[in-house]
Length: 366
Ligand SMILES: [Zn+2]
Ligand SMILES: [Zn+2]
Image (cartoon, rainbow, N blue to C red; front, top):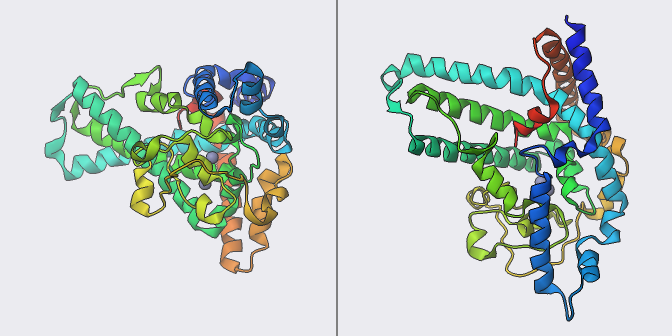
């Protein structure tokens, strides 16, 4: 076991805590300064449309950054949780990204080689082909994210973990990181599997290299999504895309409906980028006009999530209090799986030649 590699990784994990502003400059991160700036400009448009009477910088700041939101307990918990979550996310998702995805890609390639050898290396790589791969990859990743989110809402045991995200009573762009590790792993597992299979299929039939149309290392569609004001979805600022475009894309207003305390609203609009998955699954809610949304969980349950630590252990506590033995067993198995992933991560790091970059690792799931 190479303890020096493990030491370097743990040190880089702790450095994350030292440098919480790193994500502002990390390419592909939702809270990159450029995406926040675009969200700020959209907020100006929202303000100009809704401000009554005379406009001023002071009233804009009061509308966009109210103290009741930015100095709330919910936002302070989000900030504290953000720091710890980044370290845990990387440690727990590392085995999935570094071991499972390549293994699935290899198995897919082998299966295609045995079953459909006539298709191997039949399509020459071209800009059109790479464009098609880019579109398919984003559709697969987005559907996998939707499916994981749908399952997190449908199964009571998984819903307990996902409630952590819905427990925010005030929303700021940093609320996007209020996700329990089980939630993150579910998304990474499904999107990693989907993308590994897609890449393997394209690699199998292509003559030459397969790549994505990207800005830096980020899929062009993910960049456009963030430039469409994605940061506003975790704010109180109402920004809809209109009834037509909302059939295709999830607007910030649609995601705010998803954060409503009302169960019939928070069990709808589970798409990330595209809203037609919700239409297919019967969970699409397109607002006709501006709605007053109260964020959080119903019946005052959001008050239970009152500290950073409680965000981590409360789902387990709630599952172990459930009446069904099967649900309690599922919660126990999920806990064991988290422990196994942590151990795998340590073994993986200790046995590899290089130390994984934590920020790059999280970017790989964007
Ligand atoms: Zn959200
Ligand atoms: Zn949700």
